[in-house]
Image (cartoon, rainbow, N blue to C red; front, top):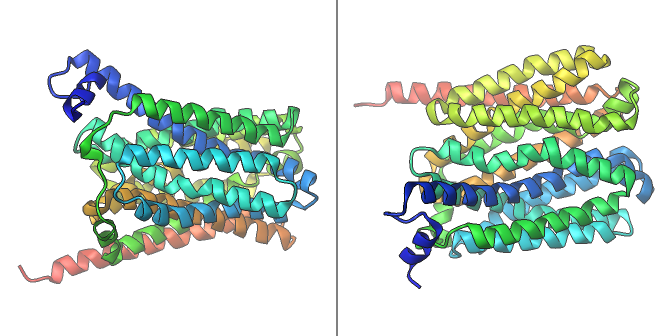
Length: 411
């Protein structure tokens, strides 16, 4: 069967009816978002059930954050390595391979009999995340058409943000009622559903074929790519410095029952979803403003949380605010990376997610470090605040330096 006939069957080929084309595009985007929903659920569920698996495995909470850090390290390792290893693969085929690894990692997490095995399982689970987002962004851009890179990435990210609203709270509730191992088994089943959706709903197209490793790597020769990834890793850390400790914030800081943790997670996720939707539009129009506005507004919310977070009336709205403000910046970071290295779109998407998971590891580590030092739970908020300040200052330095360079350049 020819490529054209495959696309026509999916309603995406030229000449297909407008209604059929819209339905096919929405189904393809749904399949992509279901994959990121599954990935987001396993990533954020671990933070919601950290008190459960730490007790079961016989370690304290700061030590248990090693599993969260291992997941983030897996993303950082897997984002470039799997993207480059499978550089020549069709992006659709790559997505299927990555979801297969994701399923395996969750099953291993469910049967881990000690912290060491659990940490390894979480690392394996994290390996496909960055590469999935990179390939998914390319496929989404193909589906929605040119000129909408921010919107395309926001669609892919939407699955992750919805996971914080629906997937993570449900997974946390499941862990509290049935056990944390059942949480990972169910997420593995969700991965199977994602695999089937990608197989049946994402169209086969030669336009999604890969390229050589050298072609993908060429984008990394641009120093501004590395600086932008550093901006992402530092600035977004405050999300995870807060999110990793939502459970203790709710039960130990404002003294609510643990049944309130899913509500706190959902509020955070709703904020992320709202911020992502707005951020996708802002990124296509003004990517630099998206980063500055997102980071700047997040700092204001973090100050309020750090000072008054022991109040329920401040904690819950602030959780929404942190999620919304920081997520507004992430699509802009993706657009900036793609504009700096358009020849390496898949790798740029993967490296963006790798940067975000450096932020995951950095935020959880910094928060755990300050809490472990006896500075109190809200010290994690101030650790995140300091990291975001560093990211914003670095980005402003880059922008000012670039403007000076353009000003003095002849012609």
